[in-house]
Image (cartoon, rainbow, N blue to C red; front, side):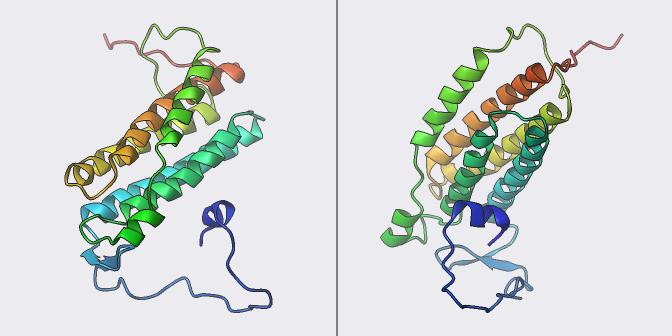
Length: 207
């Protein structure tokens, strides 16, 4: 598992187990990969496109988190939780319903409550922000700009999930979560800029 997976999941290695698993398996050398259900699909399949975008999103949030930690922001625990939830998003995406057994679905069921948690965070952060009266550009310091970048990756992840939700392969609550997450990232990016005393760049129409 990646460091993020180790942070979010228990370790199952037994005491005294000194075996180091190899990072490479060679099973994808011919352009196919496996879903959690064991189904082999081409790597360009919509499932793996969505999985890759969710993984990239977690990485983007991880980078933004490091900038935020350097500035002492108090909301970084929220970013920690979101990265863990994105592991759950990936599990749900990797379990297409067309090939899943009931045991698969039970293990990868997505918790819709996390979307409500995002909404509460958004409301709390918004209460400390000045009203948004103009279009702003990604700016406002390194923390804010990195969070805006994560927001754009989130939008792409949401777009890639949309077709597999419509086809019935993925839980619709995953799409709702990603939609709300982009709103959260926009809000927290503004919050970071305000707390750091950084100016947000305002859009001005070219002459």
